[in-house]
Every structure is written in structure tokens, then in C-alpha cells.
Length: 460
Image (tube, rainbow, N blue to C red):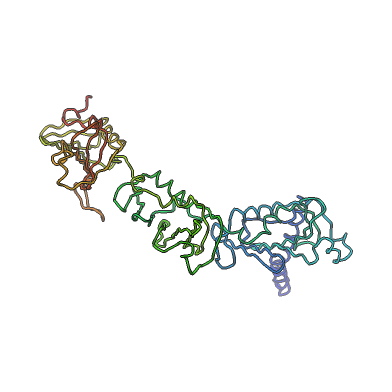
């Protein structure tokens, strides 16, 4: 290959690079604008590729910046923006069609843009991202709900609807997210309520929600879910003060009448503090946004949460799949139901017979579905009043581990133990494990707990 040929090939390659890097994007942009014009669109805009929006009117500019799945006000995080409003604005901009177009060639001079308020427009919206675009809004047209506009890509004047104008040009406060938080209930795994009368703490682990304070008990999943929906669904009525120094004028005090919650997997907490001023107006300060808001009066109901109302009133929610043995002990004897590969067996001393799997399932269902009607906290010395000093039977559910794990050692592990006392007025008194409470449940559950080993033998 000659030296001249090599030089020509290099020149052609360089020209191709220049075309692809400079000229082709320009022509592509032109093609896209032409295609947009054919469709009657003012802008060629992909909302998903917009990362920043600047709305200017007169001497002021409002900036919006995409942050994760939402938007924030200002280039620095000042507060969350109303993402739904921003997305409506982007949708209106990308779908804006014109009713009439005055081509640039029809304008004798740039001064004629003044007739439409577009020579030095006072209202501008700039979209920044993978591609840049700007929209200039001028005078209102004679027709109602119409306005003149042009874009940074063209000198043509368009007659468009005023939907985008109404969405974009409003007070900055209107762009603030009026949701208290952008967390959803399933993202919260710990809640602490501090109010007059004591502290309540809820915590979620792999097994579900637990009441940690003022007592330790299972929580009703649906009731906790309802509470969290009310908490994270709070709506701000009015933005009152930014970074206030004196909270006392709003009746707000740290550590009093407040709800702290943690997002799943995070050690950082968010706290909503509530208070009322002398007029009785309810205010809240939310530490995650560091502002004071006026809240609807019903927000005070959040502090009225009752641990008893949140309790899971099922007697003993039980996962039978993790149970390897059920031990039943009465004052007279003890026998066991053991899981085998093909089912269950009942073992009473030397006797071992196939057990009814249906009877085992009936027992588990009866304990899981039985509802507790009352809880009584008693000392050990008072157990006799409930027939629990010498219970009529104790039912223990046991897992048998064949090898050590990081959490437990091999061997028998008691999952739950149920002591059953006397019946009184249709109620049966029950105590679970070492808890200091006596539970009242329907005495009908005893039909699912035969105390005769023969009653557990499979009929087949």
C-alpha cells in the first residue's frame, strides 16, 4: 500500500469520526425536530432522560433535580419535591401540541417576536439531561387557555395550550411534597411511640411484628400495618417554619409526644414530634425534613395507640413444619407424638403406633385460631386460682436438631410450651412458657387435645 493511499484512508477515517461526533448528532437532532413538527409536537422530549428542570420567571428561578426515584427542590437538597406534580409537568411538556405555528420566515424581524411576548420572554422552562431543551412562554392569546411559545431549537412561534404554564409557574411551596415521608409501611421495621402514659415499642423480625414495650408479645400484623399506613400517610396542611430554633411556641418538646421510626436495614431514625399552640392548632416537626408543619387535627390519634389493641390475640400461631415432636404431659402420665418420614407416630412407653396426621393438624389449627379474650398478669403464687399450679396438662412443641448451628446446639429445642389449667364459665385458663400472663381462651379447644394416647392412633 502506497504512502498516499495510507494518508487518504486516515483522512477518510478522521472525517468519519468528525461526522459521527459532531455533524451526525446535529442532523439527528434536526431530524427529530422535523419528526416532532410532523406530529404537531412542540418539543422532542423524553421525560425519563430529564435530570434537572429550571423554571424562571422575572428575576427568580426554581430548580428541580432528580434524586433516586423522586425529585428534590434546589441543586442542593433543600426538601423533597412533589414527584407526582413534576412528572405531570414533564408529561405535559413532552406531549405539548400546537394549534397554530408561525414559521420564522413569516417574521420580518426579531422585533416582531415582541408581539407575542417572546423577544425577551419572562417565563422560561429549561430541561437538562441527556439532551437539553428550553421552552419560552410569552403572551396569552386572544383565545382562552392559549399562550404563545417558542423553543431553543427553533425561532418558530407556536400557539399552545396553557396546561404546562399552570403546572410550572406557581409558588415554590406548591412544589414541596406534602407527604410527611416517602417511606412505605413495608419499609419500616421499628417504631417507638413516646407519649404521656408510657412508651410503646414495636419491632419487626423474620417472624413478623412484636410488641417490645411495655410488654413482650406478638403483634397483630394487620393492626400494625393499619397504624403504619396512617403514620407514613400523614399529609402536611401548611409549611410553617424552616429549621426553627424555638419549638416551644408550637407546643413541641423533644422526647414528648413523638413517634420515632426506622427504615428497614437503617440505623438512622426519623422522628415526628407533635404539639399544639395556645389556640389548639396542631403542629408537627419531622426531623428528616427539619421543618415545622401544620397537621390535620386527627394526626393526634397516632399517640392514642394502645398496646392491648395491637396484640395478636391468636393463642399460639404455630408453624407445624418446624415441629418434630409434640409432648403431652398430664399429672398421671406422659406420651409423645413424633414425626417420621412418612407421617407421625404416637409413643406411650413401649407402645408405638402410627398417629393420625389429621388429628395433629387439628391440634395445630385449634391453637393457632383460638382467640384470647383476656390477659391476666399474675405472680407464681397466684397460679393456683387458675388451676395452673398443677395444670391438667402441658403441651410442648419440640424441634430436634441433628447438628449444631451458629444459633443453637444440636438436640431437642422447645419451640413453645402450653400449660392448661381449669375451666370456668366457658373459659379455659392457659399459660405459655415462662410468660407472667394467664390467657383466657374458649374451653372448646380441649376437644383438639385428647389426653388419652389411644385417641391419637390413626384409624387406618
